[in-house]
Length: 114
Image (cartoon, rainbow, N blue to C red):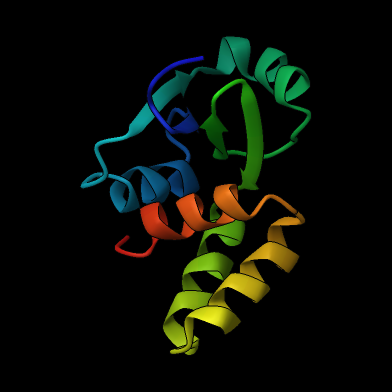
């Protein structure tokens, strides 16, 4: 697996993909994979997602689905509407359905400044 932590499949000319790329622009630990119309269906099947962008968090040999732009905005909204870390942690854990504390803490640490 790559050393880049976030893997983003970005569809050409897609306004949602463009928005996610802008949000992740300052983040160094990312890999943006451009998806073109001729391989769009292949990527949908590969990642088991129907819409773009497709955002994943990679750690060691595991891949965790963050989702698309709406999902990312929901997570960022959790940061903006909660001041206590415990609430942020609990809501993100529930939202992403990930039970590994270390992964949730890493996701929070990486996304908090977007």
